[in-house]
Length: 197
Ligand code: OGA
Ligand code: NI
Image 1: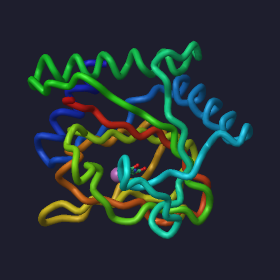
Image 2 (image 1 turned 180 degrees about the vertical axis):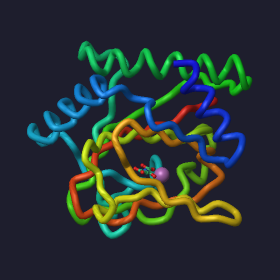
Image 3 (image 1 turned 135 degrees about the horizontal axis):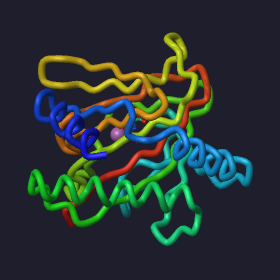
């Protein structure tokens, strides 16, 4: 895994957006997809909100994804493997880059056909505990024309990333605005944040 972690860090240092195409193995993503679909069938994927605490609200003209938070106490074998992978990634970041990450949080996300998430920043206005945003895609057959790309607005460049299976993208939560373009197929992912407080 260290080679993949190195690839992520090198691309992050080089361009501000870390990327790897094989962060999640296909077995692990298969297991995670099953869980996500299971939550969907149980009606356990809920419309996501915007803002925090008293500012929290839902606005389907701004984001239309449905989410389900992962619990670190899970007994599900794929989720346990997932958290093991995340723990080693955080240790690697802390040891090699003195990142100082002490907490993290992750949710499954489902963008059904026609869903999107308009341009936003992942840090809340009154709370900068989110240091890095991480997105891992679970779409085995994503094809050009399916939509649902992640668009990241860098200082001098706009980066467009396909939500293909296994890919992980990682960037500073407080730095780049980004959006999810409308998808014409069902789009699955796990999104999370690495936090300093
Ligand atoms: C988010 C987000 C991007 C993506 O959930 O905050 O920006 O590609 N997700 O799913
Ligand atoms: Ni975001």
